[in-house]
Amino acid sequence: MVAMAAMMLLSFLLGALNISAGIIQANLFMILYAAMFLQGFGVAKFFISRSQMSIGFKRISLFLILFMALFTNSGLAQVIAIVGLADLAIDIRKINKAV
Image (cartoon, rainbow, N blue to C red; front, side, top):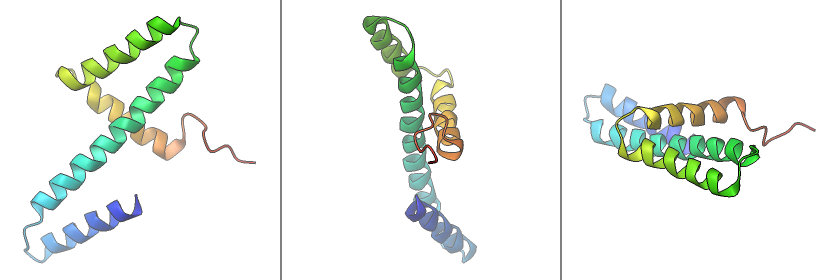
């Protein structure tokens, strides 16, 4: 994540020096967006796996979330990416418990 921030800073500085860095910034944004989407899908999978649903219904739910996020234009992918960003910032799943 630090390397991604360094690359964003470098592309911003290149833009300030009138060197076109738009393609670099677009690629970095897409990589970051994909990472946050996967993080958000991990949050959804975590909470669905903790629910009291049957195994088949859990799998169908995960498939529907993934299908709707990737193949429809509902904005669900952006919501999942924002949830992933929130999980990265405030640790929704409490993975790193303080001792």
